[in-house]
Length: 423
Image 1 (tube, rainbow, N blue to C red):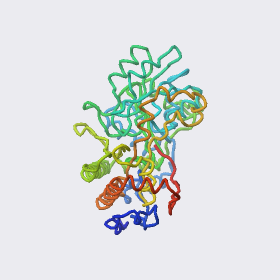
Image 2: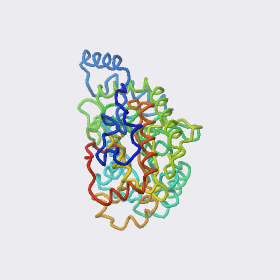
Image 3: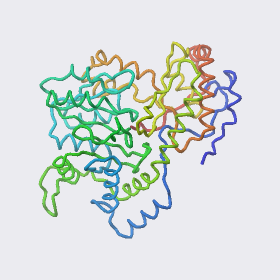
Image 4: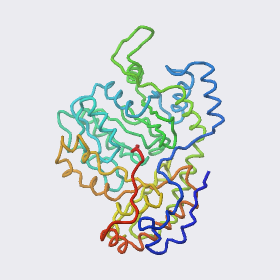
């Protein structure tokens, strides 16, 4: 599986050997953030064969029902409503709860969280984050509540849960709905309780970039019976039975092939988590003495998927900013990601709708300039992590000289960001 050569790792000892200045890339082929994990292929293909033999490809088939049941069992929640993707899940959830007006959410998240609201005619109101956790700041959220506010959406960024208790209290006091975007947090826990049962409902993503994937897919999970019934209606055109449409709805169903991939992924969940955990600790070990860079820490007393290895870059110590480090790494075929730069409030249509939002998002702006996600997952080997860290150490050691050279003239190589943004 791991056939990429790191033969140049020991040769990165002067600037001329950096690919951005004309040297050979550290890796022959690209290392990605979020390269898909593939479970047991034989089991997946056997499930696909069974699906084809049954000729039941969608519409609440056996694989879909089994997948929903397995998710409920894993995270101890009453209802799982699997959907074609997490964005559709959030849209169906917002419609099911009849939300309108304004909804408070962080700007430091994947833009789909905001887009789902805007698409439905609900105004996203961006709130600042806690600079330590990168999650929604409940105190900042409280200052944004007004008579038009109908809900709050917390995002469990990097799989690290929000301040759930503070947000529950805030929503209760102001009679607001509370939702959680848990796209990063499948199989994670908060104070011993699995993410999925908090607030009115939570939304998971099972996109291909997630450590558990269904190719494309997602799920809304909730402990509320009536809400679950409305969600099931709305994800299937409002059908309450044959020829009986009882509500407005869309087609947000997950198909049987996707559910089969999800089941196979769940069978490998423990293996994927262990790979992510080992990779995270390798990065911590190798980067612990590099000045100006630090890894976001996880609470290892809780269950965690370790899906993201998140580096923060302090330019004052490294002598080189995050974007330059990112550019150099890309030229070496290490395709790091600047999640979630530049923040939703600096993207359209939000940049035009609320041009002054950045004034209240001081921590969001600062974190968006510092964060860099590193390759991990089952497609990355220990030797590759060591080589990446060695490269980062050399770049930081030579930071001022590299910066001066990059600013003084054109580099010998220019990379093109070809990958598609993902949650």
